[in-house]
Amino acid sequence: MKIAIAGYGLEGEANYRYWSADAANELTIVDERQPGREIPSGAETIIGDGAFEKLDGFDLVIRTAGLAPYKIKTDGKIWSATNEFFAQCPAPIIGVTGTKGKGTMSSLIAAIFEAAGKKAWLVGNIGISAIDALGEVGSEDIVVFELSSFQLWDLERSPQTAVIGLIEPDHLNVHVDMEDYVNAKGHIRSHQKDGDVCIYHPTNHYSHQLATSVSAGTITRYAIPDDGGVYERDGEFLQKGDVICPTDLLQLIGQHNIENACAAISVARAHGVSIDAIEEGLKSFKGLPHRLEYVRKFGEADYYNDSFSSAPPATVAALKSFEQPEIVIIGGVDKANDFSIVIDTIRSKANVKEVMLIGEIRQKLAEQFSQAGVSAKVTVLDATTMEDIVGYARQVAAPGDVVLLSPGTASFDMFKDFYDRGDQFRNVVNSL
Image (cartoon, rainbow, N blue to C red; front, top):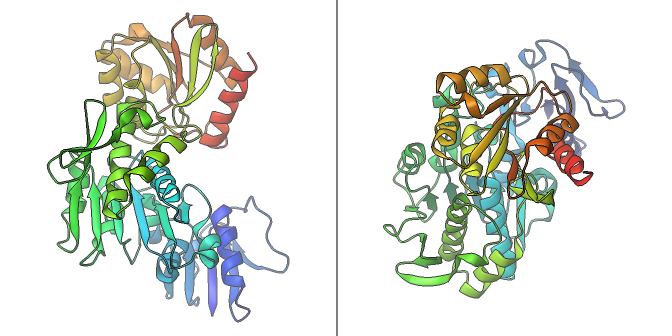
Protein backbone atom coordinates (compact mmCIF):
# COMPACT_ATOMS: atom_id res chain seq x y z
CA MET A 1 0.00 0.00 0.00
CA LYS A 2 1.25 3.48 -0.85
CA ILE A 3 1.00 5.64 2.29
CA ALA A 4 1.75 9.32 2.96
CA ILE A 5 2.69 10.28 6.52
CA ALA A 6 1.33 13.85 6.50
CA GLY A 7 3.05 15.93 9.16
CA TYR A 8 6.26 14.70 10.77
CA GLY A 9 6.34 15.78 14.38
CA LEU A 10 6.06 13.52 17.42
CA GLU A 11 2.83 11.89 16.19
CA GLY A 12 4.10 11.62 12.61
CA GLU A 13 7.16 9.80 13.90
CA ALA A 14 4.91 7.31 15.74
CA ASN A 15 2.78 6.91 12.61
CA TYR A 16 5.86 6.12 10.54
CA ARG A 17 6.94 3.45 13.04
CA TYR A 18 3.50 1.84 13.06
CA TRP A 19 2.87 1.69 9.30
CA SER A 20 6.46 0.81 8.41
CA ALA A 21 6.14 -2.40 10.47
CA ASP A 22 4.41 -3.90 7.41
CA ALA A 23 7.15 -4.32 4.82
CA ALA A 24 4.57 -4.25 2.04
CA ASN A 25 3.78 -0.59 2.76
CA GLU A 26 5.55 2.13 0.77
CA LEU A 27 5.84 5.20 2.99
CA THR A 28 6.50 8.83 2.12
CA ILE A 29 6.99 11.56 4.72
CA VAL A 30 5.15 14.75 3.77
CA ASP A 31 5.44 18.15 5.44
CA GLU A 32 5.21 21.79 4.40
CA ARG A 33 8.09 22.68 6.71
CA GLN A 34 11.40 21.01 7.28
CA PRO A 35 10.63 18.49 10.05
CA GLY A 36 12.24 19.13 13.40
CA ARG A 37 12.64 15.39 13.92
CA GLU A 38 15.23 13.21 12.22
CA ILE A 39 13.93 11.58 9.06
CA PRO A 40 14.68 7.84 8.81
CA SER A 41 17.55 6.98 6.51
CA GLY A 42 16.36 6.31 2.98
CA ALA A 43 12.81 7.53 3.59
CA GLU A 44 10.95 9.07 0.67
CA THR A 45 9.89 12.68 1.32
CA ILE A 46 7.79 15.50 -0.09
CA ILE A 47 8.84 18.67 1.74
CA GLY A 48 7.93 22.30 1.11
CA ASP A 49 5.10 24.72 0.44
CA GLY A 50 1.96 23.06 -0.89
CA ALA A 51 3.17 19.56 0.01
CA PHE A 52 -0.22 18.53 1.41
CA GLU A 53 -1.88 19.43 -1.89
CA LYS A 54 0.25 17.00 -3.91
CA LEU A 55 -0.98 13.69 -2.54
CA ASP A 56 -2.88 12.16 -5.44
CA GLY A 57 -1.75 8.61 -6.08
CA PHE A 58 -1.52 7.59 -2.42
CA ASP A 59 -3.86 4.89 -1.14
CA LEU A 60 -3.80 6.29 2.38
CA VAL A 61 -2.84 9.69 3.80
CA ILE A 62 -2.20 9.53 7.55
CA ARG A 63 -2.68 13.05 8.86
CA THR A 64 -1.12 14.22 12.09
CA ALA A 65 -3.70 15.54 14.56
CA GLY A 66 -3.07 19.27 14.08
CA LEU A 67 -3.31 19.06 10.29
CA ALA A 68 -6.83 19.95 9.14
CA PRO A 69 -8.34 17.34 6.81
CA TYR A 70 -9.50 20.05 4.40
CA LYS A 71 -5.86 21.08 3.80
CA ILE A 72 -5.09 17.66 2.30
CA LYS A 73 -5.71 17.16 -1.43
CA THR A 74 -5.68 13.49 -2.40
CA ASP A 75 -7.63 10.91 -4.37
CA GLY A 76 -6.87 8.38 -1.64
CA LYS A 77 -8.35 7.95 1.83
CA ILE A 78 -7.52 10.39 4.62
CA TRP A 79 -6.89 8.51 7.88
CA SER A 80 -5.32 9.17 11.28
CA ALA A 81 -3.67 7.39 14.19
CA THR A 82 -6.86 7.98 16.20
CA ASN A 83 -9.02 6.32 13.54
CA GLU A 84 -6.61 3.41 13.34
CA PHE A 85 -6.64 2.96 17.11
CA PHE A 86 -10.43 2.96 17.26
CA ALA A 87 -10.64 0.49 14.38
CA GLN A 88 -8.12 -1.96 15.87
CA CYS A 89 -8.41 -1.59 19.67
CA PRO A 90 -9.63 -4.83 21.34
CA ALA A 91 -10.60 -3.12 24.63
CA PRO A 92 -13.53 -0.85 25.52
CA ILE A 93 -12.71 2.85 25.07
CA ILE A 94 -13.73 5.71 27.35
CA GLY A 95 -13.31 8.89 25.31
CA VAL A 96 -13.05 12.28 27.01
CA THR A 97 -13.27 15.68 25.35
CA GLY A 98 -13.99 19.30 26.27
CA THR A 99 -12.15 22.58 25.99
CA LYS A 100 -10.45 22.30 29.36
CA GLY A 101 -10.49 19.69 32.11
CA LYS A 102 -10.33 16.65 29.84
CA GLY A 103 -6.81 15.79 30.98
CA THR A 104 -7.79 15.85 34.63
CA MET A 105 -11.02 13.91 33.99
CA SER A 106 -9.13 11.30 31.96
CA SER A 107 -6.45 10.91 34.61
CA LEU A 108 -8.99 10.59 37.41
CA ILE A 109 -10.91 7.94 35.46
CA ALA A 110 -7.73 5.97 34.82
CA ALA A 111 -6.67 6.25 38.48
CA ILE A 112 -10.04 4.92 39.66
CA PHE A 113 -9.96 1.96 37.27
CA GLU A 114 -6.38 1.17 38.30
CA ALA A 115 -7.51 1.23 41.94
CA ALA A 116 -10.22 -1.24 40.94
CA GLY A 117 -7.54 -3.65 39.69
CA LYS A 118 -8.06 -2.93 35.99
CA LYS A 119 -5.25 -2.27 33.52
CA ALA A 120 -6.13 1.24 32.36
CA TRP A 121 -4.35 2.69 29.33
CA LEU A 122 -4.26 6.49 29.46
CA VAL A 123 -3.63 7.64 25.89
CA GLY A 124 -4.17 10.56 23.55
CA ASN A 125 -3.22 14.13 24.37
CA ILE A 126 -2.10 12.85 27.74
CA GLY A 127 -0.24 9.70 28.68
CA ILE A 128 1.39 7.60 25.99
CA SER A 129 0.91 7.65 22.24
CA ALA A 130 -2.21 5.65 21.38
CA ILE A 131 -0.72 4.15 18.23
CA ASP A 132 2.42 3.06 20.11
CA ALA A 133 0.30 1.37 22.79
CA LEU A 134 -2.07 -0.38 20.42
CA GLY A 135 -0.11 -3.63 20.16
CA GLU A 136 -0.05 -4.07 23.94
CA VAL A 137 -3.71 -3.38 24.78
CA GLY A 138 -5.61 -6.51 25.82
CA SER A 139 -9.32 -7.23 25.51
CA GLU A 140 -9.74 -7.27 29.31
CA ASP A 141 -8.14 -3.82 29.69
CA ILE A 142 -9.82 -0.43 29.60
CA VAL A 143 -8.64 2.51 27.47
CA VAL A 144 -9.11 6.11 28.59
CA PHE A 145 -8.55 8.31 25.53
CA GLU A 146 -8.24 12.07 25.91
CA LEU A 147 -9.51 13.47 22.61
CA SER A 148 -8.83 16.96 21.29
CA SER A 149 -10.85 18.54 18.50
CA PHE A 150 -7.90 17.85 16.18
CA GLN A 151 -8.05 14.12 16.89
CA LEU A 152 -11.84 14.11 16.58
CA TRP A 153 -11.98 16.10 13.32
CA ASP A 154 -12.63 13.09 11.09
CA LEU A 155 -13.18 10.26 13.61
CA GLU A 156 -15.26 7.46 12.05
CA ARG A 157 -16.12 5.61 15.28
CA SER A 158 -17.16 6.84 18.71
CA PRO A 159 -16.07 5.40 22.05
CA GLN A 160 -18.44 3.14 23.96
CA THR A 161 -18.37 5.69 26.79
CA ALA A 162 -18.16 9.36 25.79
CA VAL A 163 -17.51 12.16 28.28
CA ILE A 164 -18.17 15.70 27.06
CA GLY A 165 -16.94 18.43 29.38
CA LEU A 166 -17.33 22.19 29.16
CA ILE A 167 -16.90 23.43 25.58
CA GLU A 168 -15.89 27.04 25.00
CA PRO A 169 -14.21 28.81 22.04
CA ASP A 170 -10.64 27.61 21.47
CA HIS A 171 -8.24 26.84 18.62
CA LEU A 172 -10.08 29.33 16.41
CA ASN A 173 -6.75 30.16 14.78
CA VAL A 174 -6.78 26.59 13.39
CA HIS A 175 -10.47 25.71 13.03
CA VAL A 176 -12.47 27.57 10.39
CA ASP A 177 -14.86 28.88 13.05
CA MET A 178 -16.65 27.87 16.25
CA GLU A 179 -19.04 25.66 14.29
CA ASP A 180 -16.11 23.70 12.86
CA TYR A 181 -14.64 23.32 16.35
CA VAL A 182 -17.90 22.09 17.87
CA ASN A 183 -18.64 19.78 14.93
CA ALA A 184 -15.22 18.18 15.35
CA LYS A 185 -15.91 17.60 19.05
CA GLY A 186 -19.24 16.05 18.09
CA HIS A 187 -17.67 12.93 16.59
CA ILE A 188 -17.12 11.63 20.12
CA ARG A 189 -20.89 11.10 20.23
CA SER A 190 -22.13 10.98 16.63
CA HIS A 191 -21.20 7.34 15.95
CA GLN A 192 -22.37 5.89 19.26
CA LYS A 193 -24.69 2.88 19.20
CA ASP A 194 -27.41 1.42 21.41
CA GLY A 195 -25.86 0.35 24.71
CA ASP A 196 -23.26 3.11 24.61
CA VAL A 197 -23.11 5.87 27.24
CA CYS A 198 -22.60 9.64 27.04
CA ILE A 199 -21.92 11.65 30.21
CA TYR A 200 -21.92 15.41 29.69
CA HIS A 201 -21.60 18.82 31.30
CA PRO A 202 -24.77 19.91 33.14
CA THR A 203 -25.12 23.49 31.89
CA ASN A 204 -22.99 23.99 28.78
CA HIS A 205 -25.01 24.62 25.61
CA TYR A 206 -22.51 22.99 23.27
CA SER A 207 -22.13 19.89 25.42
CA HIS A 208 -25.91 19.50 25.50
CA GLN A 209 -26.09 20.02 21.74
CA LEU A 210 -23.61 17.22 21.09
CA ALA A 211 -25.02 14.82 23.67
CA THR A 212 -28.53 15.12 22.24
CA SER A 213 -27.44 15.06 18.58
CA VAL A 214 -28.16 11.32 18.23
CA SER A 215 -30.74 9.09 19.86
CA ALA A 216 -28.60 5.97 20.32
CA GLY A 217 -27.28 5.11 23.76
CA THR A 218 -28.04 6.81 27.07
CA ILE A 219 -27.15 10.36 28.08
CA THR A 220 -26.52 11.54 31.64
CA ARG A 221 -25.41 14.90 32.99
CA TYR A 222 -22.80 14.98 35.73
CA ALA A 223 -22.53 17.40 38.68
CA ILE A 224 -26.31 17.72 39.15
CA PRO A 225 -28.75 15.29 40.80
CA ASP A 226 -31.37 15.33 38.03
CA ASP A 227 -30.17 12.55 35.68
CA GLY A 228 -28.70 10.01 38.08
CA GLY A 229 -25.12 11.15 37.62
CA VAL A 230 -22.72 11.96 40.45
CA TYR A 231 -22.95 15.39 42.09
CA GLU A 232 -21.56 17.25 45.11
CA ARG A 233 -23.44 18.55 48.13
CA ASP A 234 -22.19 19.70 51.53
CA GLY A 235 -18.73 18.26 51.07
CA GLU A 236 -19.81 14.86 49.76
CA PHE A 237 -20.11 13.14 46.39
CA LEU A 238 -23.57 11.61 45.96
CA GLN A 239 -25.57 9.66 43.41
CA LYS A 240 -29.36 9.40 43.57
CA GLY A 241 -29.19 10.74 47.12
CA ASP A 242 -26.74 8.10 48.33
CA VAL A 243 -23.35 9.21 49.67
CA ILE A 244 -20.35 7.87 47.77
CA CYS A 245 -17.48 9.53 49.65
CA PRO A 246 -16.28 12.89 51.04
CA THR A 247 -15.04 15.43 48.51
CA ASP A 248 -11.91 16.08 50.58
CA LEU A 249 -10.51 12.77 49.34
CA LEU A 250 -9.89 14.63 46.08
CA GLN A 251 -6.33 15.95 46.11
CA LEU A 252 -7.08 18.90 43.79
CA ILE A 253 -8.19 22.47 44.44
CA GLY A 254 -11.00 24.39 42.74
CA GLN A 255 -14.71 23.91 42.13
CA HIS A 256 -13.99 22.99 38.52
CA ASN A 257 -12.05 19.98 39.79
CA ILE A 258 -15.00 18.94 41.95
CA GLU A 259 -17.01 18.89 38.71
CA ASN A 260 -14.23 16.98 36.93
CA ALA A 261 -14.36 14.40 39.71
CA CYS A 262 -18.16 14.16 39.39
CA ALA A 263 -17.68 13.26 35.71
CA ALA A 264 -14.98 10.68 36.50
CA ILE A 265 -16.99 9.04 39.28
CA SER A 266 -20.09 8.99 37.04
CA VAL A 267 -18.08 7.02 34.48
CA ALA A 268 -16.79 4.64 37.15
CA ARG A 269 -20.27 4.01 38.53
CA ALA A 270 -21.61 3.38 35.01
CA HIS A 271 -18.97 0.65 34.73
CA GLY A 272 -19.82 -0.86 38.13
CA VAL A 273 -16.66 0.25 39.95
CA SER A 274 -16.88 -0.11 43.73
CA ILE A 275 -16.95 2.81 46.16
CA ASP A 276 -13.73 1.57 47.79
CA ALA A 277 -11.92 1.78 44.43
CA ILE A 278 -13.34 5.25 43.79
CA GLU A 279 -12.07 6.47 47.15
CA GLU A 280 -8.62 4.99 46.54
CA GLY A 281 -8.48 6.44 43.02
CA LEU A 282 -9.33 9.94 44.23
CA LYS A 283 -6.71 9.76 46.98
CA SER A 284 -4.00 8.41 44.67
CA PHE A 285 -4.24 11.09 41.98
CA LYS A 286 -2.19 14.13 42.95
CA GLY A 287 -2.87 16.27 39.88
CA LEU A 288 -1.15 16.94 36.57
CA PRO A 289 1.89 19.11 35.91
CA HIS A 290 1.03 22.62 34.72
CA ARG A 291 -2.61 22.36 35.90
CA LEU A 292 -2.86 24.51 39.05
CA GLU A 293 0.37 22.82 40.14
CA TYR A 294 1.61 24.07 43.49
CA VAL A 295 5.28 25.03 43.11
CA ARG A 296 6.38 26.42 46.46
CA LYS A 297 6.02 29.09 49.11
CA PHE A 298 8.49 31.98 48.86
CA GLY A 299 8.40 35.16 50.93
CA GLU A 300 5.19 33.76 52.48
CA ALA A 301 3.49 33.89 49.03
CA ASP A 302 2.31 30.73 47.25
CA TYR A 303 3.29 30.18 43.62
CA TYR A 304 1.08 28.11 41.27
CA ASN A 305 1.90 26.89 37.76
CA ASP A 306 -1.20 26.74 35.54
CA SER A 307 0.68 26.94 32.23
CA PHE A 308 -1.69 24.44 30.62
CA SER A 309 -4.24 27.26 30.63
CA SER A 310 -4.27 28.19 26.95
CA ALA A 311 -7.84 29.52 26.73
CA PRO A 312 -9.79 32.11 28.76
CA PRO A 313 -12.18 29.64 30.48
CA ALA A 314 -9.20 27.86 32.06
CA THR A 315 -7.93 31.14 33.48
CA VAL A 316 -11.38 31.89 34.87
CA ALA A 317 -11.48 28.48 36.59
CA ALA A 318 -8.03 29.10 38.09
CA LEU A 319 -8.95 32.56 39.34
CA LYS A 320 -12.05 31.16 41.04
CA SER A 321 -9.97 28.57 42.89
CA PHE A 322 -8.52 31.07 45.37
CA GLU A 323 -9.84 33.51 47.96
CA GLN A 324 -6.40 34.85 48.94
CA PRO A 325 -5.07 38.00 47.23
CA GLU A 326 -4.03 37.00 43.69
CA ILE A 327 -1.35 38.21 41.32
CA VAL A 328 -2.15 36.59 37.99
CA ILE A 329 0.11 36.35 34.95
CA ILE A 330 -1.81 36.39 31.65
CA GLY A 331 -0.80 36.54 28.01
CA GLY A 332 1.05 34.96 25.12
CA VAL A 333 0.00 34.32 21.52
CA ASP A 334 -3.28 35.78 20.29
CA LYS A 335 -5.57 32.86 19.29
CA ALA A 336 -8.55 35.12 18.59
CA ASN A 337 -10.16 34.12 21.89
CA ASP A 338 -12.68 36.25 23.75
CA PHE A 339 -11.15 37.49 27.02
CA SER A 340 -14.30 39.23 28.23
CA ILE A 341 -15.05 36.38 30.65
CA VAL A 342 -11.60 36.79 32.21
CA ILE A 343 -12.02 40.56 32.50
CA ASP A 344 -15.50 40.16 34.01
CA THR A 345 -14.18 37.65 36.54
CA ILE A 346 -11.30 39.92 37.55
CA ARG A 347 -13.68 42.87 37.88
CA SER A 348 -15.96 40.84 40.16
CA LYS A 349 -13.22 39.33 42.34
CA ALA A 350 -11.95 41.89 44.84
CA ASN A 351 -9.10 39.55 45.82
CA VAL A 352 -7.35 39.95 42.42
CA LYS A 353 -4.84 42.63 43.31
CA GLU A 354 -2.70 42.69 40.15
CA VAL A 355 -2.83 41.39 36.58
CA MET A 356 0.52 41.03 34.80
CA LEU A 357 0.08 41.06 31.02
CA ILE A 358 2.86 39.41 29.02
CA GLY A 359 3.61 38.24 25.51
CA GLU A 360 2.48 39.18 22.04
CA ILE A 361 -1.11 39.88 23.13
CA ARG A 362 -0.27 42.14 26.09
CA GLN A 363 -1.08 45.55 24.52
CA LYS A 364 -4.32 44.29 22.97
CA LEU A 365 -5.40 42.91 26.34
CA ALA A 366 -4.38 46.11 28.11
CA GLU A 367 -6.73 48.06 25.84
CA GLN A 368 -9.57 45.63 26.61
CA PHE A 369 -8.97 45.92 30.36
CA SER A 370 -8.90 49.71 30.03
CA GLN A 371 -12.17 49.79 28.07
CA ALA A 372 -13.75 47.64 30.80
CA GLY A 373 -12.63 50.06 33.50
CA VAL A 374 -10.24 47.72 35.32
CA SER A 375 -6.91 49.09 34.13
CA ALA A 376 -5.93 50.08 37.68
CA LYS A 377 -5.16 46.44 38.40
CA VAL A 378 -3.11 45.95 35.21
CA THR A 379 0.64 46.04 34.61
CA VAL A 380 1.89 45.58 31.03
CA LEU A 381 5.20 43.78 31.33
CA ASP A 382 7.63 44.04 28.42
CA ALA A 383 9.45 40.97 29.69
CA THR A 384 11.50 38.78 27.40
CA THR A 385 12.32 35.97 29.83
CA MET A 386 10.60 34.00 32.57
CA GLU A 387 13.22 35.36 34.98
CA ASP A 388 11.91 38.88 34.26
CA ILE A 389 8.30 37.77 34.74
CA VAL A 390 8.89 35.98 38.04
CA GLY A 391 11.22 38.75 39.18
CA TYR A 392 8.46 41.34 38.89
CA ALA A 393 5.92 39.04 40.58
CA ARG A 394 8.35 38.53 43.44
CA GLN A 395 8.65 42.30 43.93
CA VAL A 396 4.91 42.89 44.24
CA ALA A 397 3.92 39.71 46.12
CA ALA A 398 3.16 40.11 49.81
CA PRO A 399 2.80 37.47 52.53
CA GLY A 400 -0.42 35.53 52.02
CA ASP A 401 -0.63 36.27 48.28
CA VAL A 402 -1.04 33.74 45.50
CA VAL A 403 1.14 34.23 42.40
CA LEU A 404 -0.66 32.44 39.59
CA LEU A 405 0.69 31.74 36.12
CA SER A 406 -2.51 31.12 34.14
CA PRO A 407 -1.89 32.67 30.71
CA GLY A 408 -5.15 31.83 28.90
CA THR A 409 -3.23 31.80 25.62
CA ALA A 410 -0.82 29.71 23.58
CA SER A 411 2.86 30.05 24.41
CA PHE A 412 4.72 30.07 21.10
CA ASP A 413 5.79 33.72 21.14
CA MET A 414 8.21 33.28 24.07
CA PHE A 415 8.35 29.53 24.71
CA LYS A 416 8.48 26.22 22.82
CA ASP A 417 5.12 25.11 24.19
CA PHE A 418 3.10 25.18 27.41
CA TYR A 419 5.36 22.51 28.93
CA ASP A 420 8.39 24.73 28.39
CA ARG A 421 6.52 27.76 29.74
CA GLY A 422 5.48 25.88 32.90
CA ASP A 423 8.86 24.20 33.35
CA GLN A 424 10.62 27.56 33.16
CA PHE A 425 8.20 29.09 35.67
CA ARG A 426 8.69 26.19 38.07
CA ASN A 427 12.47 26.27 37.69
CA VAL A 428 12.75 30.01 38.20
CA VAL A 429 10.43 29.99 41.23
CA ASN A 430 12.36 27.08 42.76
CA SER A 431 15.61 28.99 42.25
CA LEU A 432 14.42 32.04 44.24
